[in-house]
Image 1 (cartoon, helix red, strand yellow):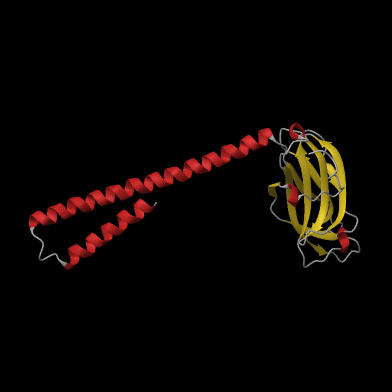
Image 2: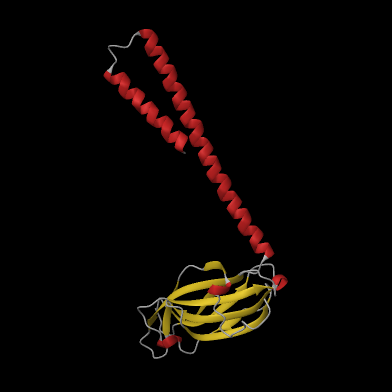
Length: 218
């Protein structure tokens, strides 16, 4: 990219030079300048093409890495499930509960799911020992969710491990689903707007550890 920018800059300066000195330049010099200008343009074109090709290769490598990760580790996702509003003509559905799936090819173990606020405070957690990619989803319905504040962002956070690396010093995995709520006029009913899923590898210091398993061997 830098080479392309440099080539374009040199080409621009040559154009300025030609405009300012067109009367003082002889035919031989003009020919050499035009040849040089053409070479600069060709160099810039190839440099820009190489940059775009490098970007495409980097993007492809990233996609291949993500696909490889999906086949070599568990990947939990959460989604919100809704129930129909009984009022005819309503365009919104009430929130019912969350469902947690394993879409990776590797079983997840020590699955802990927690409702957390933006400061990392937990208000509800559940635990399941094992979740394969073809298992029924985990149902997660925090009892206090209708009492959450409408102005805040909350998270459903799943923390889990790879069954083949349990007990080793491999990272934990976390999936976070941010969401906000708005309360319905019907008591105990809420509407929910879910955000984009966030995936990360968590260090021991970032571990949520909702059920205090730190005494177990690593």
